[in-house]
Length: 522
Image (cartoon, rainbow, N blue to C red; front, top):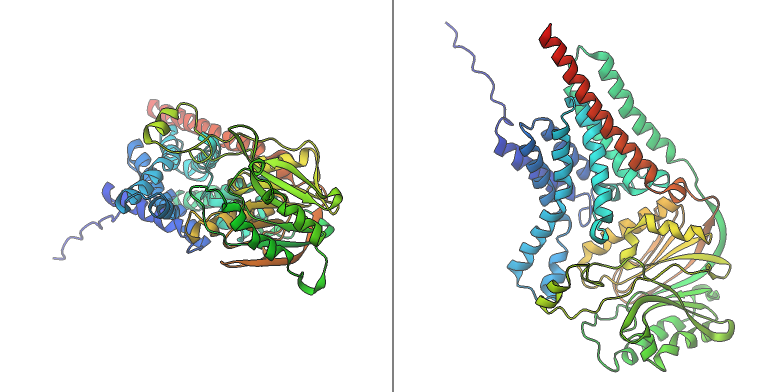
């Protein structure tokens, strides 16, 4: 007599296994960003999360899956923060590593919330995977980008800036790119969950997935802007050392390198229209300096180019702005043309209610003031510029404001990421490339120590340089034309659509409940 066949053991039958796999999936998804920069890993990691959630046994388990996934994802993707805390902040290695994990755990509350609400809503499995969870995920990414000053770093869409899904950026920005990815992943899992005998429903999900893919390919062939003027530009990457505590004479020692690099003959003997210095060239507010404050004016007079540079402004005692200045040849004037609007919490200002925390720790920090948009276009050689300072590079929704009073042909970002290790600069550059795709305008990125670049409107590099002191001399093709749909409408249409999907999921849950009640009565 044959031995009775033993039932096959489900490898995902144990909750602890599913939670461990969720953490592994988050770690894999982080490889979509620098230093690995493998977009497919982000897709696989998210796909695994959706599948594991479909196997979850409870609301609590779903929430834990989202949290474990997020802890691994953010801790791995933001591991470069260890460098700034340990090397520059003097935090012991163990505590710095623990702080990275704690940061990851805090940010992981957003995927945790999406997973929790999906299971709490309780729509049919296919609807939850294909519509409810992806919609809640996108809403969560947006909330993370605006809550407590905003931290949209590692939004999934950034990993696909170069990939086919990135073609959606001019339509709805980085969150739409994320949406297309997560909805495609959800549709794949939903297709697997539907019984084979329900062929019509399976066909509908296959068409939904195919439409997302075909739309991505078709949008890749759309031109959203057109050439409009040129600039001869020099980006000076001086690779000056970080200054933790400003001392008298620092500016006098730092500026000769800037002046020397700016004065060098342009490549090919071309005259220059614009010279760009990165963030943090000056140590003291410009109003406190005499001869050093006029150095950009002397460079403009000698080269015939406008010089755009960054320095703190102190219009009144103790009131500081992180400002962009321009020295122009017309009348040899120096003007403050923009002050940073989006400040870094705890780095540039103290959030409301946390002053006691800063004072208790003895952090030597002075609140900076939020700036405002200029009242007129910032124009160089007939080309309007849209200006951002470092961290502002993350906020495409705010960049749109420049189109309300001007027609930018070029986006300029000045930054200094010397506090962080190399992956931070590469991830930062992914965001610059996304801003180029969203607006269909070139982005000129001027960094202090490396990765200065010119990025074309399609997000591809025109030129990029590595680390060290060097110039980036190039002819910049500015672009114009009608603003992209994202520039015109922002995130509002996408968020409305995501809320609609959530409400459809709630409706599907009640319909399923009513059918179940009728079946029980019959």
